[in-house]
Structure formats: structure tokens, C-alpha cells
Length: 128
Image (cartoon, rainbow, N blue to C red; front, side, top):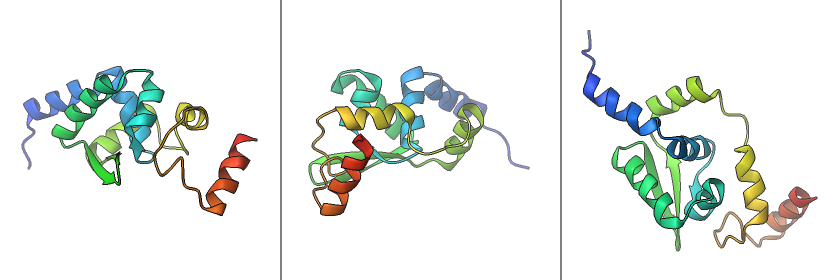
């Protein structure tokens, strides 16, 4: 029988108990997101968002991946993913608030500025 590490579980729960970190995790469990998208979602300045991301990354809950000048964050902890599914419900599509922000913010990331003909057509369809 595996012994539970109550101190470790408690520390992870404290990280998850913060409302803005929960919003971040809800977004990145659905799809990887850049800081620009997360700033818009939280309506917080970049330093604040980066601080929250650092805490989650240092705890091993999220991972980052650099693509050119952009850094994308994704949920990397399967156990936390399971906890989020229980607490927030299963993932169904894109975060509802995130899809609105992606249409409204001027974001330089490749997800928002893929200028291939197919991507341009998809963005036009989403906006109509």
C-alpha cells in the first residue's frame, strides 16, 4: 500500500485553491495557450500572469513550450487534470471566455496569426 504524502497533497491543493490559477488551468487543460491569451482571459497585467504561471510551472503542473518568440503553456500533470475534471467538469471544447478573447485581442502568436489560406478562412468563419 502506498503511503499518502499529506504535505505534498496539501501544497498542491493550495496552488489549485487560487481562483486565477484555476482559470489558467481550466484554459490550458483544453489547449496550450500563450501569455497574451491568458492576460486577456484574466484581465490582468503580464507580470501578474507570469507570476502565476511560474508557480504552476515550478510545481510541475504546467509545462511551457517556446515557438519562435512565443511561449505556450499546457497542463502537464495527469493527476491535476483528473482533479480538474472532478472539480470543474470534463473538458468540452475551448474555454468559452477564451474563444471570445481570441477574436477580440490583437495577438501576435502563431495561433492567432497563421496566415495560410485555410487559417484565414477559418478565422473569417469564426468571426461571422
